[in-house]
Length: 364
Image (cartoon, rainbow, N blue to C red; front, side, top):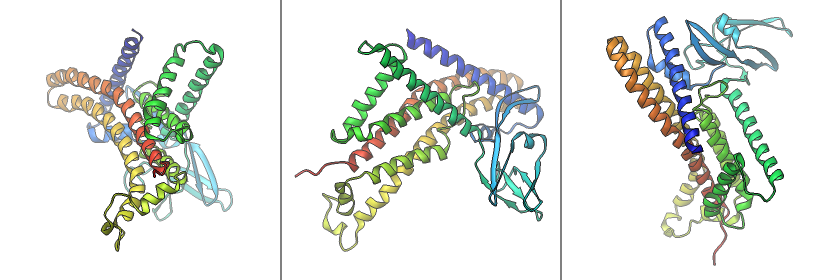
């Protein structure tokens, strides 16, 4: 019964999500020609402000701090300066040089803060700004810490009693990761060495996938659909695998067992392939998670965009298309709930398999 309550609540949030985006799209349509591709890309990419909704042409946003470093000097200002004006001008106190910051709408630095030189050339400073995805990452990490703290306190309070509420959900997931993922891929001798990372990465991906489906501020950011985030997770798996790998792991790379000798000598074909494979594995991890999560957001936004595309041709067609598109969008969002779990499972499973290969024992 509780599962159905959770499902109904999430479905309500999805409807709110679709309604919120429909309003935003309608405002865009009212002001200028509707361009579906630009609107969709704008919604899934990172930004220096957190757009909440648009009402009667007025954008309600949270403006985040911009932090840039140029020639050893740090400059901080609110992203609101770019909303009020296209350029932000400040003075370097060391040499009284005037610096002009802007965010270009095209070119190689599109959507990024740059310094505009006197000759019109763009210079990209070191940008460590708190963007939408960074802020959402802080929020999700804080939420994960709080959830695990509550579960830990529940264990301390209840002792040997049966788990209850949030504790029972987390215990089931942790035991699942340990018994059905880690222990089946990693030797019993080494499983405890890698288990903390596997549990952490599973919950991080799963919770962020779920939060990305909730349309209410401060959730709804496309964190796991950001290639930078997925690449960092993949690099963690890469370094853990290769830095903690035993001699049997590296011996198999240099002298792959069960392979004919002519694939190893005189041209070391298999060692080359195995070495390249060490670097392609994290690449695949990063791309798979990024592509699947981003694709889900694009499909949902694509269904909503189709309403306004058809409405430009026929108002009656737009009305009919709205009901059809919303139903399809809700259906895809329900599938995204399953995808949120599957992607966390796949990333954790593949990481466990790599750890298992890196820690396997020699068999006589």
